[in-house]
Image (cartoon, rainbow, N blue to C red; front, top):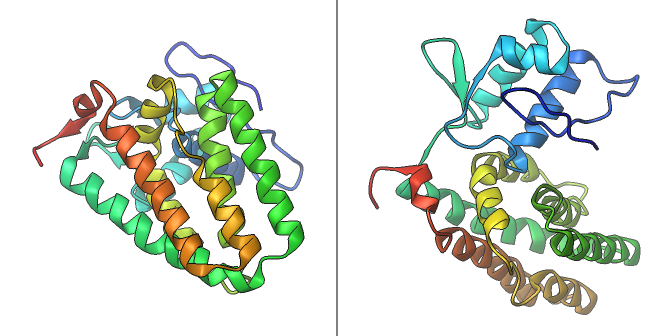
Length: 236
């Protein structure tokens, strides 16, 4: 993953593999940038500008933005611009509570299917998160954190909640990124370690508690960042 620069926007670029069609690649690329908060709230995006930055025709960009708008990640404006919408305090609280509700359920429902190889993978991801935090790499920290949660929830082969969870991540991603980039210390307690220990003990209650605490720690981090409410509109 590398970061090319354009005059107006910096994007994390994903490799375009042979099995990916252009429209799929553009969608995944923009989605990844939204998930890690690389595109800030309120920044205007245009189909032409994105097409030029990605060296593609406007059509796959238009299709990708339409899909992302349906997922609530971007908002189409009347002047053919698209933006990451600003947040209201009420919507932020609702999204966070939904994360807790869905993700604690997803974690506990995955518990019976978690194998030793899954736990080893989660430990590897958590170590990578620690490395990214030490480097001050906010984008990698965000994406790896999502990978940890996604890998845990996807251990359940019958899991259907992951797309719903990811839709919440898309809407919260820019705000999580703002917090991560401004905080010197993100984790006082590593809740991922607590979750892994709960998995080893097959303790569903402890797992739910660790995942909820992990999400609430992140919410608290966002709320304590100076200037975060400049990205919000309305009042609580």
